[in-house]
Image (cartoon, rainbow, N blue to C red; front, side, top):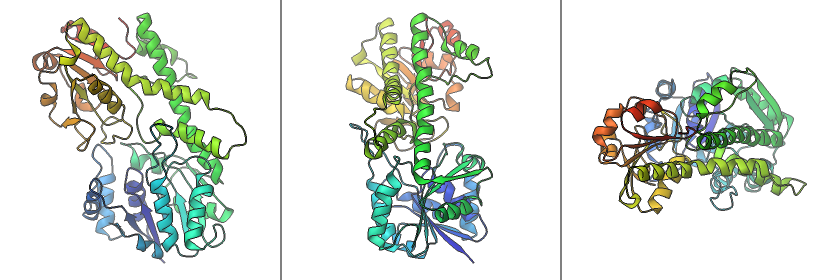
Length: 443
């Protein structure tokens, strides 16, 4: 008997999840993607067996081609196919508002209404999108129940199981990391665990929905806080005149220490917003008036790192006698993660926005990103470097490691290089005559 599965949202989570499930014998998977000017092209690409994700994603291209060829995977924009589905996965984005950091659940609410319209009795729903604690039972469940006339835990089953993927390791992280599954009832948990056991090689932990949602947001808040510590220590090292990377190596010489890596900023779909989702869940559904002060401070530190990059750049230009308003900046890397095309919450945008507010000309380069309306973008590195007064390296794509100092000297008007990811050797750059500054590297 064939189990029919719908995966809603063909992004960094939905695509690999759908393809892996479609590769399981007895599973037939339909991806659902809203057709829009920016994302509608994904439907055709995937139906032709092509991955729309740029960057290095081991195994994904071959997997998509295989499941499309055998007929177990296709993509549509027609939500009515849900009426045939035994399992529905939600993998849409859940951004937070830039001003008050409250979650924007427009997509997840819209999808919940569509599911409720077509949901059949006995089906299993699983939310994989990152949400604030309490969202599944207080927002998703009521919408689906009202639209369907069915009751969760009785007429249909409802679970939450968060993703742990990251660009460059989409398949690896789904298959080879432990999975957390939370259900609104025991049967919901069991059905979700049964499905994931076909694609996950590691242990699958079963719990309730609220615990699973809380675990997701706390897991990423933990990492965000550790990065913030590393970033603040980097600023201290700059001020003291020592190298944070040497300090980090010495600290981590103890096996029970693991100081994180500082840098130009924190991006991605999860870390910049999950702290705020945790806070939102606490305020909406918690029983105390406590404030999430510690993790909020970490967010403030990490959000300031792109501004610190700009401040380093302005110091470098001042040392060379270059007028800021007359300067041309080249920003290397707009993806938030190396060797990927994922620009979600990229620190490059904050840097570019800050610089352009100063009236300077900024051109961005990225070898993987093809759509970045937030700034002038080129795929030609020489175009970005030509006559530039300052280079700000935000993303450590492999291509940038190969740039010889002489290329900066010959191509740029004023060779000022701001290294946000410890890509270049400081002494080599200084010996070449380049004004070099880096996050965490003092004079």
